[in-house]
Image 1 (tube, rainbow, N blue to C red):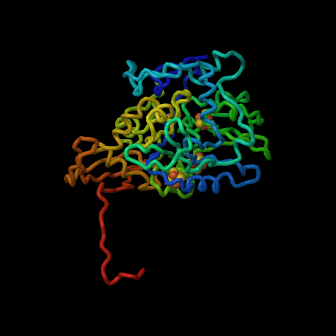
Image 2: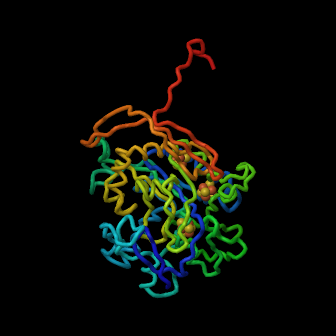
Image 3: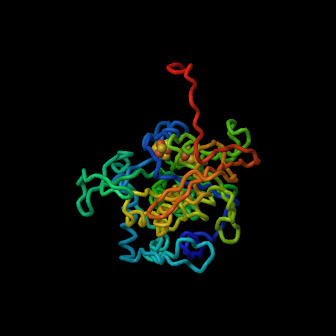
Length: 420
Ligand code: SF4
Ligand code: SF4
Ligand code: SF4
């Protein structure tokens, strides 16, 4: 297996193909703290792409309730168990700052799904399993089921005390991560899966696919899905006509995908980041909101980075959930990310206003400083809030968002009371 550099793991790792990087990469940040589980995102994708015969069970976007829920059921627990079986007790991080530039979470000492498969021997490119039909039965089983006291699942009603509840659950929003080292692509014996050089979107060539379901088996996120009516596999296409700006609605300017654009909870931001052709890492671009959130403030973290696919979906972790659980899911950056979110630095607070401010992809932001509005104490430390204004620009440099931190209040004139 050739060696490729995985910046999320802080080290090189084995992968089926030598490194080849796109010019720009499709990426997104989800703020778990704000999700309503309204499933508007899920239905926007369904009604656009998967409403036909044979696609009934396909939810390219889904929102599942953790810790018990998952679609297909148990997808993450099963893959974690396979990794543990392959390398007992070895799935650990050395969270000290790593030597190599770009390694912001430390170094992962365990085996990725690619390395575990290699160590096992045989033909498979990545460790995986094929879910049963039953595991696809319920897209959100255990919805809103809380976890009880530690070691006593199912004990409820203990009350809450922020920042951590003793009973807890949260919503996890999921779609294909358009990974930098896709396991689906490595797994395919027909070479039917490819990563687009212009935006890193991962697609299945429907004409080449023969429905062997190796992608379904080896994607650790279980996002490719088999269609029995056509006997080929399908997956999220990153709404590429919108991202390209070729959908008539976009008027030629890159626009966010369907599932991103509809989100009423304003938890989603999607964009494109520039990739360094030598390392595959993100080129420094601190004015790009995604770059800022992931690389500068480090408030958003990758989902199960230890799998090794270098996923391009990032999450602001939920602040009320036990840290061990979150660290297993998002790696060693959890404590820092939650600290950032609980008492955001001035710039971060401004950037957080940009979520769902526009359907156009924001390529650049600018902050105009405003007055201090409040001093408070958070977690024993003084925190000041400023009414800054954040401005977002699209790919053509047009201003597409302009928001202040303090939302302006308009008082409705008395003469309009009780009227519309
Ligand atoms: S639309 Fe937004 S708020 Fe609603 S479930 Fe999806 S991610 Fe959560
Ligand atoms: S999430 Fe799965 S389907 Fe999507 S690119 Fe990564 S490995 Fe492939
Ligand atoms: S990006 Fe498009 S295709 Fe992919 S899950 Fe979202 S709406 Fe569906």
